[in-house]
Image 1 (cartoon, helix red, strand yellow):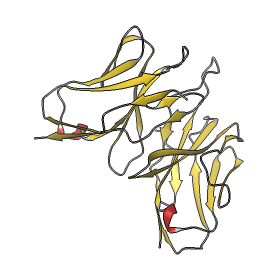
Image 2: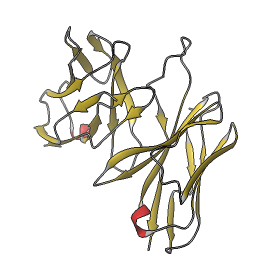
Image 3: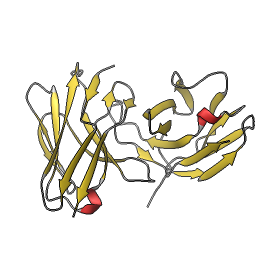
Image 4: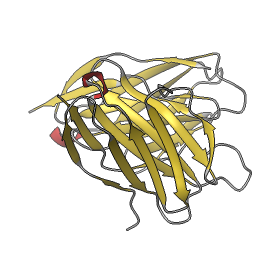
Length: 118
Length: 107
């Protein structure tokens, strides 16, 4: 049963500290998404990659957030320095391109990383 | 981006049929309509997708009228375990989820 995995599942840190979240997409999936979820804003898209290349990071605060895919099996989301307003659940999702190359709306989500910044 | 609108919350009782409607303003010709379900403390899960008319799977039915300006997710005979948030995300080259519809099923 292929699944997206995320680590850590929970992270508590202090303001100003660096936070790195990791995601392993489903093997064979070539598109990876990072989302942030809060009660107030709902589920927001931060960034996404196709074939490891960043396609859109317009939802991400550029001054403190960065997203990378060092290889096809690992995606990272880093916050430096972290702030209390970054407290949220961060989800990673992956998808596989359709044969006709249209966007694939069936995304598979990981369990999320719950981040608390004190 | 195409804009979708759905109710913030709905309540139901076990055994009832629940219909959640989403409006799809300015949906593009090539866009499919997709619904996701999210249980507490879990990531969203794809449940159904369609282009027009009706689609049914083991989880739900999706009704899309000819003009495609709306869609209705139908959950037959809900149970307590159907309590979740349901999303009909906006689409372009990516999905925009928003806050979804919070369904609460009571015994």
